Image (cartoon, rainbow, N blue to C red; front, side):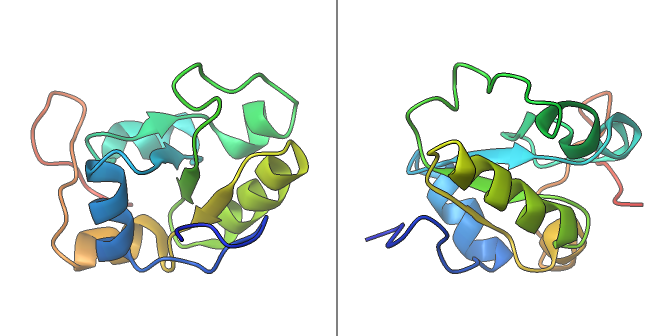
Length: 120
């Protein structure tokens, strides 16, 4: 089973990409807006951890009732997001190494105009 407990094991980027691409989970990018705009996974939803998720903002409708894979730049904020999400009853895990590892593994990164993005 994908999520065995409230806080599941972390996924390597290729696992996260596979599971979110096949619709098994929603990829939720919790980085701040400038980071997101520079480059993000093409199918990810954006909900910044510090400015919105911590403040208690409602989850986007596409997330409600679905497992979530959180991602940030390196993995620290996404782990915090998992704690917040599981506290709200969401089945969640995160990506080991974040978007830095995602890009390093050759997975797609979209920029602001649909071109190749960068992870700063």
